[in-house]
Amino acid sequence: MRILLTGAAGFLGSHLCDRLLAEGHSVIGMDNLLTGNIDNIQHLAGRDDFTFIKQDVTNYIYIAGPIDAVMHFASPASPIDYLNYPIQTLKVGALGTHNALGVAAAKGARFLLASTSEIYGDPLVHPQREDYAGNVDTIGPRGVYDEAKRFAEAMVMAYHRTHGVDTKIVRIFNTYGPRMRLDDGRVVPNFIGQALRGESLTIYGDGTQTRSFCYVSDLVEGIYRLLMSDYNDPVNIGNPTEMSILEFSNIVNELTNCTSGIVFKEHLRIAGDPQTRQPDITRARNVLDWEPKIDLQTGLEKTIAYFKDRV
Ligand code: UDP
Image (cartoon, rainbow, N blue to C red; front, side, top):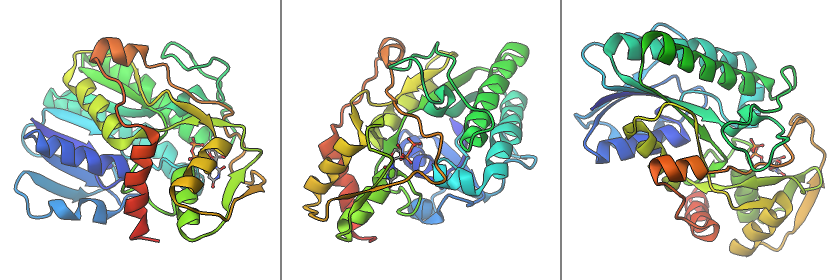
């Protein structure tokens, strides 16, 4: 297949480039490098099955020749990033999704949207199943990301139903691994960065809020299976092993041999932080025969090794 991937220089986008190329596909990677990092795909330069186009996908996208699949991964995705770029976040979810769908419709390509567990907001149903409609504060700080992705899902289903595009929606839960930005503000790079510098880990709030962390290779496997499937409804991909942020901080401190402990901080800009989050992956198991394979310790060791060179 010849695949257009937006957000190709991001954390997930760059791992997807590697996987798609390894499967023998050719990839056109697009990114405006607002929050992506060209270093993530530097190793692909010069390959004749990979092309990079520096473009903001909220502008009209022109690609010559056939395209078999469009994967829309462009978006600021960490709370710090989308709070820094609220309007770009709304635009890439709305206009960017529309443009990317337009390419898929024109080329007769299948389409895959990177959606998010954030569409569930601060969930009142636990764990989150795909048929849960969510609890989102439209005008809260996270609304710019949550509503952009909710709009994007609606737009995808409109193209599916109106134009018959073979569309897929993956709802991505917290994912970690090499190539995350050390300064993206998320808990995994923050904690590992702090531990490696010998600083105390900063816990926002009381640390009782929970998350479920999926290693990037597991996520990429699930996304690849979804792309190749004929399934059109949303699918959660994530690791259901849930823990509190306090427990998570202990694990990071242990694995890094950091003895500086933890410090509690007030939630400043990140108000609206969901209290719980855990994917129900029954659908992914049934439809894709997928479940995560990498346990947290193994995944964190690989991630810590990556960050060691960068701190
Ligand atoms: N968090 C924290 N300390 C940090 C960074 C994040 O306690 O230095 C918390 C944050 O408040 C949230 C959780 O860790 O409850 C996960 O945050 P992250 O930004 O990684 O992603 P989110 O799941 O909120 O989108």
